[in-house]
Structure formats: C-alpha cells, structure tokens
Image 1: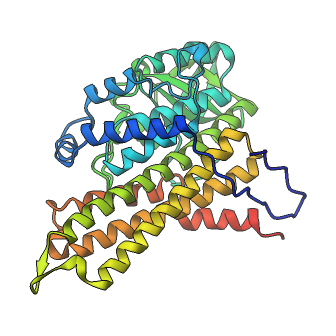
Image 2 (image 1 turned 45 degrees about the vertical axis):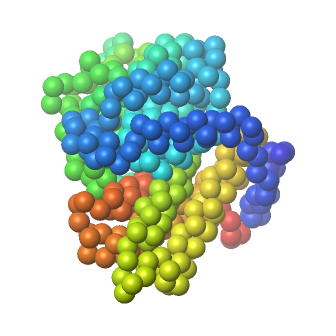
Image 3 (image 1 turned 30 degrees about the vertical axis):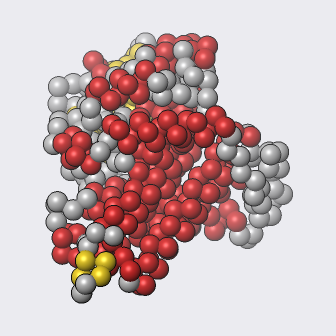
Length: 390
C-alpha cells in the first residue's frame, strides 16, 4: 500500500481502504493468543489483583525471553527490529485474557525514546529494556488534560543537571519501572526527562485507586528529583516523542479493547449456553442473540480499524491520515468494549453486579481503556476538525 499523500489545505483527509496482515503477524497472533490463554486464566487474573504490583514477574520474564519487551527496538540495539504494528498484535490477546503486565507502559517508553532521543541516548536506554527492564511514561496531571503538550510540571536547569518539580497522575506501573519518561516544561517548551528508579525519593510514589483493579497506577511527586542534563529530550525532539507516545497509546488501547470484546463474548456465550430458565437455555432467546451479534460486529469493526492503523504504520503513511485512523479506532473500540461489558453484566442479572461474576472484570477494563488518552467525545471533536473542511 502506498503512503497517503498530504491533503491540500482545507481538503478532507482520505484514507486507504487496504489492510495487510502478513504470515509473520498471523504467527505472532497465534503464539500470543496461546501464551495469554495459558498464563492468564481468570483464576490467575483474580489472584494477581490482590498482589502489590498486580502482575506475575515470572510471566513478564517469559515475555522478555520471547523478545516481546524489545519487540519494536532495532536489532542493532538488541531488539527484535519489528514495529508498533506487531506490538498491537500482541496487545489484542492480552485484552482478551485480561493479562496484566507492564507491556503497554514499556512500549510507550520505547516509542518515546525511538522518536525523540539521540542516538547516544537510545544506545544507553533501550538495550536494558530488551533485557527485561521495565519502562513507563508520566504525562498526565491533576487537570486531566489529554493534550500532552499542555504541561504544568516544571524543570529548572542547575549547572550540569536539571531539577524537576510538580505532580504527575495516572503513571502506569511506576512502582516497578526501572526508568520513566516524565513530561515537564523546560525553558518555556515541552521536554521529557528520563528518571531512573534510584532517583525517586522514598515518598515519591503513591498508589491510586482506579476502576480496573488489574491495573496499577500511581501519583508521582517530582519534588527533589534531579537528573543529568544528558537525560533530557528537548525541543522538537520532545514534541516528536510526545506524538509517538500518543499514537502508540491509541493503537495499543484499541487493540486491547478489540481483544477484550472477544473475551466478553467468550464469557457471555458460555453463560447463555449454560443458564436455563423456563425449561430452555437463555441463549435461545432472540433478543439475546441479537445483542451478541451486535457485540460480534462491533468487535470485527474494531479489529478492522486496528489493523488498518497497523497497516498505515507499517507503510509509513502521512501523519494526518494516521492520526485520523487511530482516533477512529479509539472511538470504535472504546465504545464497543464498554457496550459489550455492560451487556455482559446485564445478561448475568443480579449475579452480574457481584464480585464473583467475571463479566464485571471486563467492564472495568473497558471503562479504563475508554478514557485512556482521550474518550470518544474528545476524539470525535478532533476528528471533526480533521475530516470536515472549514
């Protein structure tokens, strides 16, 4: 598929309808699906929810051994030399089986470094990730602004170092991260600071209570954190890094949500073929069949959006066309997953609202993903600007 040409000023963006899903991606999807199914049965999901960090280190080590942590890192730096498209392929079955790991957070870190860091910084920061080091990003603040360039946290130069100040919210997997990319304002412009775990103070992290209890999210206090000037990404490079992180977050969340819908259908179909009322399986009722069909169609639409985005990434599409595709994928998958999760809870009746029902686990994951890096209303407003000529 050829790259999409830049539209003329005021002209609507036109997207290619082509999709590519090669043999390598199919093999990766098959392997990831088997891995997530084996490593993340619902009993394991529930057990990990009660642990401090919310994931099994042995599972993460197994993923590292498969090369997934450095999936999108160039081979010259110890990675697999693949792309974000392959990371999305892995994220889909993770959503289906509610696998909790620092995979997504680490991939956001990787994409930020690849897009903004210098060659020297990449050579120092990325090989440890390929070896199993965990990365994450700290981009959001108390105002809840999804525009990553609107930053309140500050950085001040102090000789050969930079002092950070401010607060960050919703930092995924911060307690286990070996390195964090933290967005700050430096000399009046957005910048990113790479902060290592040993640079965090004893009281720097505070765990947040979030709706998806398979996740771990933290508030980060930057007070007293000081990093070398060489650990900064500044100027246009920082803006490139923020844009890359944003694109990666949209794609991985969309892929995970598409997989989540498949997981919901697994739960629903099993229940509808088990529960009997008035002498018949409730799955025989037409209204429930129709709803399941709606869920299936939404899942397939979401997967089409996700793999369209992956195709555009692989083929190096024009940035505006890619942004449109990613925002559309985020809207479709986010809303579709929430609808599926809500219907699954309703289908289970009163039991669906209890802790013991697995359907609520998917609804919680859906609500988290729906608002991650922008909800549907936010993306539709941006799409209107991109698609409708003024």
